[in-house]
Length: 326
Picture 1 (cartoon, helix red, strand yellow):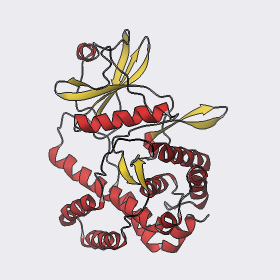
Picture 2: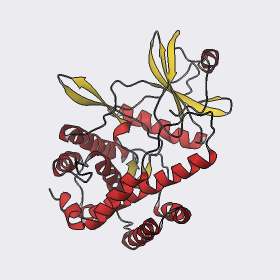
Picture 3: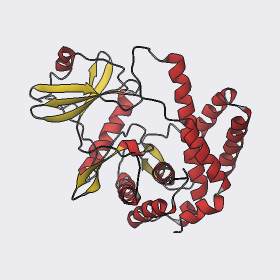
């Protein structure tokens, strides 16, 4: 679990002094997440999530909190930042910023099916449509220049085959980078563990989208590729036709892709796989070099999953491209 900042009940009460939450019934660290400290906090007035931010600046957090509030106002099921008695949604505990959110119902899924893919496709399309009216801006911290730099830093730690793969893919992405793709707010991390489902009428329904702390201004197609890469693999660990059809068709019912986006689809699937292969490699290296041994951490997400997906995308360009025309 990712609890970098430990809190006693007394400290938690001090931290929440200016919130009108009633009496605390229970609280517990959340066994998810990588970068922030998270606690469930249950009181006699409701259930909440407390997030203590370990790395972000106040300026970055202002963007994230405004985005969540904006999406919530426009009907998206996302966490709502809770204001204290001073109408502040961002406060500080021992120099670290923190925020309190309403706790959404449901839980994440391990395996997706076509119904899940259809629902997340619709939700992502809605997020992209609504986000085009969001006036705040945050540059993409994982733009190509940053990916190049991280790739070069990782090369010495890779074996020969992986280093050659990385070098070749970076060269391909550089030569095929399209600066004219439609850009707006993207989630940038819409994996299954950041989406909640709850059971209603004997079926699972999407009940929340979480973790907007990588959100930024970037190509919408990149966000769609990230989503497909995680939600649509089948039994052979490659893209399942029915899942992919369900997700892409649902998305395009809300926001149809233009011709340029369709032409860049297979390239963007590769770019999304590359980005998370590198970020997982980078996190692994930082964790083992700098981790505080008193901190409990989530298990690593395996970089090889994304590396293998990248390899398969490279081998199946025609198939990848055909998916967008289903």
